Length: 90
Image (cartoon, rainbow, N blue to C red; front, side):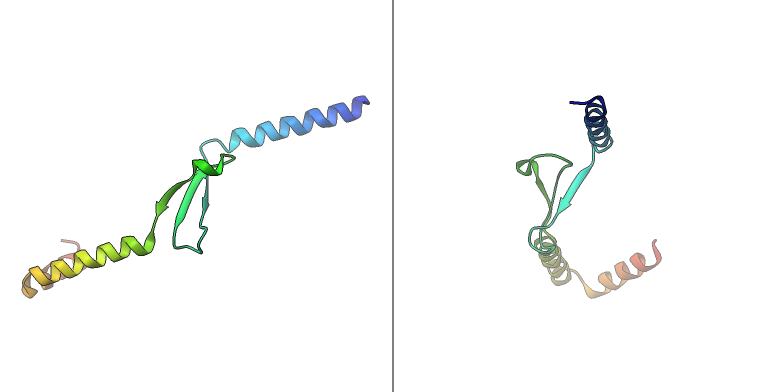
């Protein structure tokens, strides 16, 4: 190989190493089902390293269930006072 080609290959390797070093600690966020589930994995990492970080629908359903339980078990006046506190940040 000529010196020019060898130098070009060396530069490409250095560029690749530089890009990889700047991406350390970064993550790729993916949603395989259009946003229902969100996963993350290290940049350049194997797909088996991905971690599920959000199930928006199931989390919302659980919060909604807790809210209904709160409303059923708490006096309406107390709930209205709590709403005022939330609105003004007391």
